[in-house]
Image (cartoon, rainbow, N blue to C red; front, side):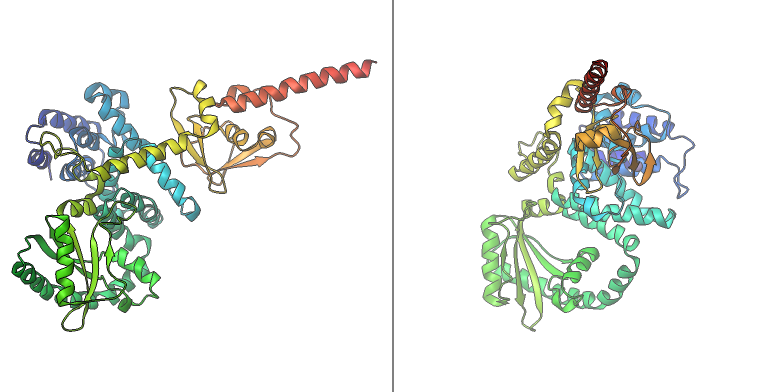
Length: 489
Ligand code: MN
């Protein structure tokens, strides 16, 4: 793959795009990474290039593709974000900055933080396009994971399964989610992966043969009844998704009915119901297995009709019926129709996509609506926010540059007054350390400490902490005066 490969991909979907700008970004990036190599031995520029190509294939807009090219520049080269902004504008710079920030969030293998980390991931990205770039980045890194030391492999694979894949799922990006999971699976759970591959290979091949035969019969059924299908095809369940289901079904493959399923894609919603009726007229449906996700979509917006039937040989097969639009959404989620399709063609972004975006925006609000936010706003108006964890897994939202003292006062005034030190990610740290997003911070109490020291006022970053310290000092002074006075008389 080279620059021409990228330009070719972009031209396919955006014939009118300003390719000179892409070329300029490519050259800028190549120069910035000059002499650098990936651990695989490839020249570094191959990595951002592959990501940009992937983003182009995902039908992303031009600023996203350019940001994909530049995504590792500020972090890994001498070129700064300001230079990127000067060369490629504010929008591209903002996207690159978001990717850099997201890269600093790390999953440390603690289940109880996972949900907060997922929310944080979305909130910090601010722009959903940043998440798309990060997904493309992660997929590319998973492909070369084997060159990393095992400890790193394990961490990245776990993080992919716990944070990236569920986030993709919530954005409705089913295909990407499965891709992430299946790439990470062998590194995250090597023995389980080998076990599953061994036990599933044969049953899967058998089921695929059954499905092939049935696809033919479904085609005939639709023809005779004059239903125009867009496509009828088989789909094999992704390995990690099969694994998760098996864990819930006593590891018994016989309890899995959708290892291979048949997908029928039609034009209209009413065709979906007609096809369901036709299928049931020739094959007996399994009780309790008819699901109408069209009338009642899954929380992530997934829509489809599902049914499981006994075919003429008594074999059990799942069928999924949906329209093209539902199919696109199931595979690509909010990334479907993201850019080009609605620009110019008069097509609107489907309502459910907008709802998803709204939910993300609400998530961001969730993290900025705590009480201290308004207060903090006064002194941190132009500052970014960070998110840190307490040992209980609570997420605390603080301004960038905040210290353990700020956190201590945020939790409790007394904890602030008696703070003696902190553990940051289980390593001991001083009270004036600047916290970073994703840090797990435990405040160490110093029982012998009488109260805050005056120089803390210059260290803290939140108004709340500053006021509590000043308050304490004022009270202390009054008390001292009083003591002085009472001693004299
Ligand atoms: Mn990268």
